[in-house]
Image 1 (cartoon, rainbow, N blue to C red):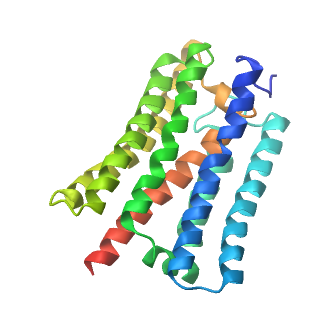
Image 2: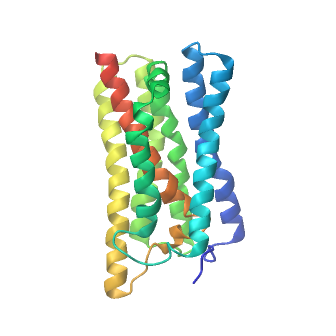
Length: 242
């Protein structure tokens, strides 16, 4: 059983490890800016920023250790990496984080365009295409996951600009873009399950490469975090409407 990625050159794994930290710092910086805009105390601002970094560091450590046990490297429906990482993380976001007072304060003091532009970090989806180029992932799954993320990332820049410039079409465009971003994540999860089922039934190529370190950090981080960020955008738009 291979618990480490051996299907791609070492430089790809190293580049990925360097890149996966960027979204975490972007999220922490945005929360920090919201806290600054809310005129919170400097100590509180530093605590918020540090807490987010520590939280994800602990989460990534947990996922990495779980991957090293080999528990994820088994084709099952639903995939075990989703059960042990994605589901707990989105549950924590929805039941705990979204009800925190500090979350509501920060949300109130973050510009909508900043929440949208944050999704530019989804350019990291290019790694799905890189893995496919080295035949580590099935083409259909890699293109659904990679192209969707890249499209959402690039269009986030134009949507944020429309909001900033107060274009008449900014609101419907933001809603359409946000729904597209959510559907992208749902389609990735659905395609992963379908691909896994086909692999079990026919022996075709599976998606186990993203259950091995370091690429296991993608399903452990991206689906839950991105879905929560999209829901946060809807929540922000609703609060502005109110």
